[in-house]
Structures are given as structure tokens and as C-alpha cells.
Length: 269
Image 1 (cartoon, rainbow, N blue to C red):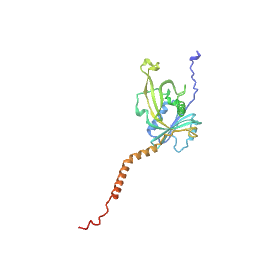
Image 2: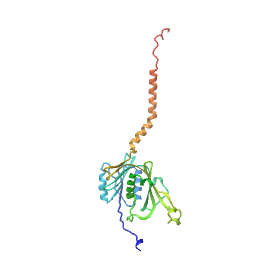
Image 3: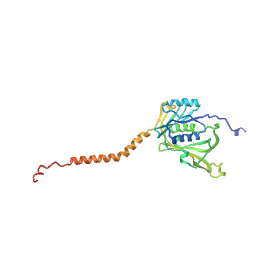
Image 4: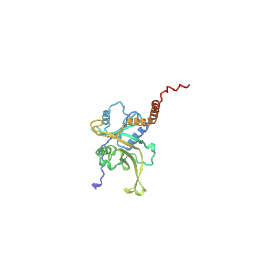
């Protein structure tokens, strides 16, 4: 019968280039590897030179025949930024990656078949705010494994979750498994076990083009890591500064209240 015939052709030809810049730490490199393992439709590239122009990434994607890109940019060996974009026309989004926990680091109990297709879950906020709708569409195209991809397996045994909380996107990755072997075909009797990695994305800016172009959204609540470190240093040195100021004020009070010499003080000596 025609209605049960399976379409085995690969129609939605999405390919994602996943790579990072030079200067990444071991933890950032492991996060990049974890993202690659979750995306059977990914392609790799050696580390990108920091001094190179980001427009060269579009050329690399064209050579690799990729229409999506996930680029990890490291700065000062402690700050990590993630670019997610469509190539070559855009849009592209720049995030700061916070609270990174890789799969090897947390050693969670979950596990899934390598190359299986994920289910993508977005909370209700991604259907209400305009800029989150754009992020959702971009995440679907980048993280969603196309049907019948040659390197994918026709199973759905894990789920990628995106939550909007505290003006940031929280990413979690879970295995879907039945409570008992007999419940494999019962959707209401499935349990979630976290696999990893886990991280938080702080959106910075959305560009109309690929790594350039007009700014579609700018996060007004974002503070750069350098500004946060300067603020922390000010708070840490405040007790010492206050101590010096109190010392100086005491010295001034003593000078102001010092009695002048009495002219008749030596009369009876």
C-alpha cells in the first residue's frame, strides 16, 4: 500500500560546520567534541586563526558544502563565545557560553545511540518573544538532524531541551528510555535520564547577515566578562579602601582638634 511506503531519500540537506578558534582550553575543546557527537550531520575544520576575518568562515562553509555553522570563539583562555548562524545569507547569533559541564566531566547516567536523531524541546517563551522565535528556528536548523541523513540512525532516543530562564538559555540533554522493556511503545511510560553536556547561553546580539550585517537584536542586560571582573575587583578591595579612608579621617580629626600651645604654661616652672 502506498500510504505505508517509507521515503528513504535525504531531502532536507542540512549540514553544520562545528569548529573552534585557537586558544581554547581543554574544557572548551571537549564541549565542541560533545556538540559534534550530538550532530551526525556535522563537518569538522581545523582550529580557526584568531587574527583571521570572520568573513572567511563563510568561504570555509562554502568549501565544505555547509549551510549552518557553530563556531566557538575563545578569548583570554577563560571566556567562551558561541556563534550560531546560517551561511552565507544569515542571520547569525552571538552567545556567551557560561557554566560549561562536559559529558566526561559530570559523568551522568544517561546514554544514547551515536547518530540517532534528537527530539528538540523549547519552552513556551520561545513561542512568545520575537527574538526567541528567531533563535528557535535557527536551533532547529542547526541541531535538528535531517531525516534519512546518511550518517544518522532512524531512532529517537534522546531529547535536547532549551529553557528560557533568567534572560538566558539553559541547555540540557536527556536520554529517553522506557520504564520497563515492555513499555517501549508507550509514550506515557518513558523516563528521562540526563546525558550531558550542560551549559547556559547568554545572548549578546543577533545579526541580519552571517557574522556581520544589521543588528536585529541587542541584549540590554548583557555585561561583558571584563566589566564583571572589574566590578568584582572593586568589591573585593572595598574593605581595604574603607580602612584607609577611616585612617585618613581619624588623622584629620586629630589635626583639627589639636589644642594650641598655652602661653602661660611655662610660667611656674
